Image (cartoon, rainbow, N blue to C red; front, side):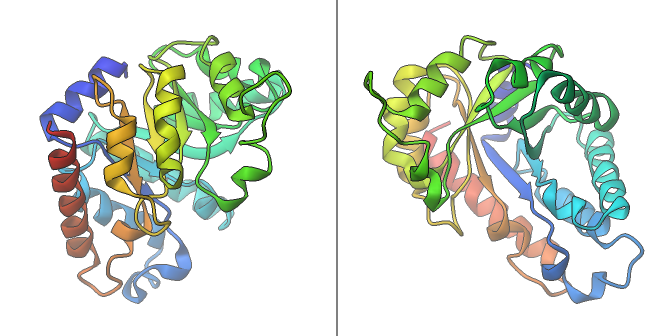
Amino acid sequence: MTAQALYEQILRKQSFLCVGLDSDIKKLPEHLLSLPEPLYSFNCAIVDATAAYAVAFKPNVAFYEALGASGWVQLEKTVQYIRQRYPEIFIIADAKRGDVGNTSRLYAEAFFETMGVDAVTLSPYMGRDAVQPFLEYTGKWAVLLALTSNASAVDFETLPLAGGGKLYETVLEKSSAWGTADNIMYVAGATQAAMLAGIRKIIPHHFLLVPGVGAQGGNLQEVVQYGLNEQAGLLINSSREIIFADRSPRFAQAAAEKARELQTTLQRLARL
């Protein structure tokens, strides 16, 4: 999927919402736990309920890997379900991979060929050769960690460098030359919203995947104010606030209501 195709979907849906499928088995509605594949059943219901308001889904791979082989199968089936029912939707595997070239090549094969997602989150801190294999797939994306929403991001990401600037700024400057705005996007946390203006000066055209809205306290209005570009350029991720809005048998309806609420807010703030 190209950036233009993603933007066209944003315009059609009047939304740049990404729903995070952080499907924690410990938080699922109890009536689903007796099913053979509870994560898959939960995901299908959430996807059906929110697809009208979302342009992307982002399964967090850790919640599936924790269950072993069964979890991985349910993740693959979730991706297949989205592909079959909602082929226009962008799918991000939130895997945060990043390793030497030959290993990265197999990670890229696993996610892009075997699983069939559109994008994978990656750590760029091992340098270009850890990212390059993902950029060799036409229509696929590397989503690089730049400025994350966790409290410990200050340990490394915002460290000042001797030559001026901060570490995350150098990551943006160097890595943006590895590919294009059609195959690289960046994670920029909503809890760092005021810093998005500076990020936009370095990468004005790239999409930003923005976690941290809702449960982590990010300010949505500031994110849109500082991060929006001429093609929207934002994917606002919300996970727990949507998928665990309710844990009763009406969980899917509650998720739809929360997703619609966020979509309406995004439409208003961005004036799509």
